[in-house]
Image (cartoon, rainbow over all chains, first blue to last red; front, side, top):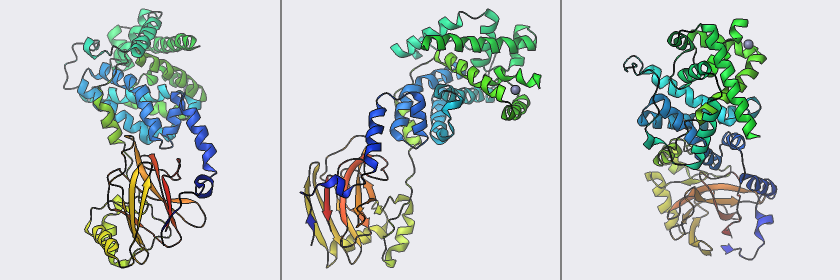
Length: 210
Length: 219
Ligand SMILES: [Zn+2]
């Protein structure tokens, strides 16, 4: 005989009571998760966290890939590959050894540079430094625009040599040996400028973050 | 090793030759000073990436979510015992299994669905829930039931309905997931004394219910 149990108090009786406080706590926290929190949850196969991490980080990944590969098609491919890798390897992320932003952009940079280096032999590299992407690619989004502005202002505080060496390597996909050759500067100097410049940018940006 | 330490910034910028990179990574494993330095410099590199942040086209998110969609993992209810006559069809459809529910695609499942609906001991439960009416037809002799969710309301784009079987221990075990509109959702492991319940959960389903049941029906 089949019976519908409409009047029975359901939750405590039929459902796993122990899970409830943890779930409530989880939902409460979800509203103001940092990228680090989200990436940790992605490591636990949390699809909602992954969706929100994409919303927060995809501009960083896509913009970097676009700048380095100079191709929307490649930038889309790289972005997809990066997030597939983020999804599958997020459990390896350790907040103690770096931020989620650094972790994700490291993957994005590596992939983008690989694309450029793979096609290096067939591509005409005479243009040298990568140009800015088309203006039409630049989102008129307040968040992105603000972020871009803050970093550019930080970059303006570097010496010319620091900025050039870093940009040629990071955006141009050049090795530090190629940079040294292009700038006619000793290898040791290039390494030092790269180090000091990167540390300075972090220092300025961290100061702004409070 | 002083020379190795000097390579950390170039490494953070992916600007080493392959051989140097290989050597530096070996050094990095054993050098706490380079590990700390690398964390700092990678933060600087991420800041640089922010200077060219550009919103990707909207369609890309769908592609990314589809490309990372978890594969459905076969989980079987411990108490499910299947009539041996259908085992071949069941094996062929193994990739589609969630809990005790089979998507009705293979001949074997369709046979079982038809057998339940025509079973001489078939019983029918019709229920009105807050999300629409449902029907569950089951046969204890076949240890299976067929759930009709065709008249249920749609749920959020990342949500679905999940069925639960609850035994004497009062701990719900997943009996599978389905989308609103699905009819003929096969539920195996049916026994007298169990209760069937249904919740709305985030795709691809959860290990324990996170919302109140839309119904609980004793079988
Ligand atoms: Zn070292």
